[in-house]
Length: 128
Image (cartoon, rainbow, N blue to C red):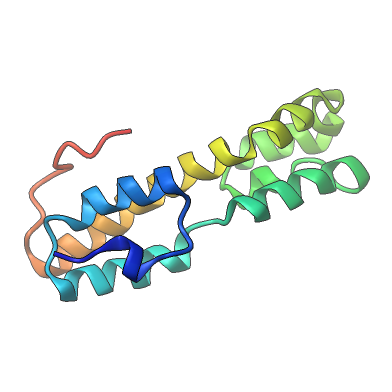
């Protein structure tokens, strides 16, 4: 059983606990594959914060595009971050936005690794 702290020490505590739950059923080789896929897909909370702050001084909604929320990104872009109120809320909740995105990406990375190894039998109950 792989230890997430040894593989990905940069994770936030709540994200680390979730990823450890995914890694518990994996071999060391599968865990290394998971880390490789997940690390390339996840977003740092600081990146979300910086791109949200850019909404105040430049282009609103950049952080939503970074998180894959294209519709919300366009809405923020054309409404100046919903008159800056949406941008303010997102600056306050940037860690939650990053966590939700990263959990979704962790589930997808888990599915990819399990499908490649032939051990995937569904979601496994790893819901948010």
